[in-house]
Image (cartoon, rainbow, N blue to C red; front, side, top):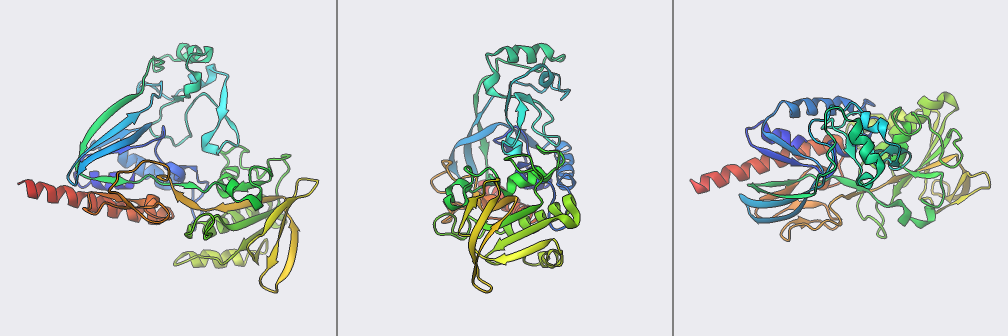
Length: 406
């Protein structure tokens, strides 16, 4: 969004291509930012207002780039656009969701709860337009949704379409995805219900999340008051992700404050860490958390997790400050999973250079470049800075191409 807006506000026409039904990416799924602990609504609302007021940005949702041909200054991008089954007449009234009964796992809560097959992805969704899950097509629920819509916005005949765009430069802002915690077998994610990821915990803490903001453990709905945060879950590990994901330490420090807010002095958070990487202005936040009496730190790479009869995860390892073994029970374990580029697994243009982790650097001629966390593991603030730089590089390509042609 930042790269598109910066380029558009410099007078360039931009097509913003989003694979999902709404803009905002993983930022829209955060409960709060660090270090100010404010809600992402702050930044998203400003960008959405800028977007709505700028006619130079064309937004295509549920669209995916399937091929790019050409060269610097003259590319043809082929897009595949999936059907939403709801057209632009939608007023977001919600009648279609009321009419249907079928549900699917809610992707915006990482499958922790269910959502109707006709739904608005989340309150800050842009465009403010409902979407029908493809599984509903051909069922009675599809007909109910269509009949309930008073403005004729439900279009069950929508088909996938392919479009081609002629563009001068390409900014890859495809974002990141959490490393698959199930691959870290000693931690039992997917087998032990009370071992969750930091992203899932973020949704649990959010009042608009699956538990209404209550920190309830999945196995039995019991309030989690004694919570372990395991750092570098997949990061800095030759068997998983070689790189440091950079946001994990700060994310866990932030999440200890969710626990304190939920339970006051009765809360207990323990961070198991290799080392804490809180740089620049984040150091003050780290020191503030260190002074919190409800937060403890154990310098250790947790070796494995077992489960007690009551469902409590038991962490086993060696505390390297004193070199003594521990077997400590907690109500809930939160894995600070690493970041890997969302573009991993996507077929990219052959001349697009990526680093050893798959993060996008760009093409040798500068016609394509990476932005935000597609270019490296970055927090929201640094992603915005990166995206502004990417927009300037793209504008430079257009300007130089125009000069060459003249």
